[in-house]
Image (cartoon, rainbow, N blue to C red; front, top):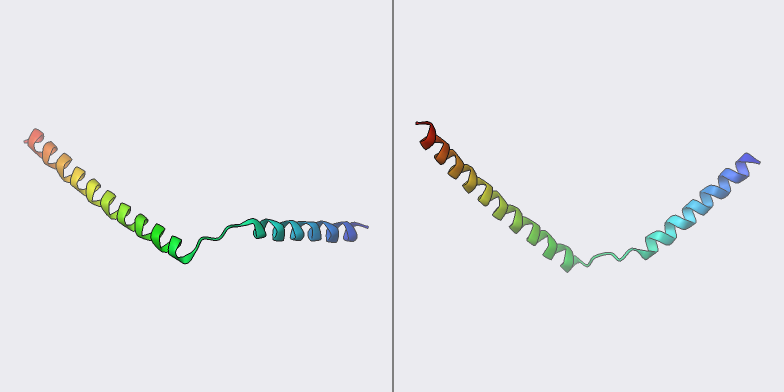
Length: 66
């Protein structure tokens, strides 16, 4: 009896999983490329800004501590 219940539970789970996967709207290749480019550009810009802020803070602290 426990085996039948376990198998039925797995079938229900598997059926539900397939149903949920069919609802997914997968992005297009163009969309993925566009989003990747945006992420890379924003990452580079943020890296430059953080580097500039670091240099500015270091310059200010060096002048204060001298």
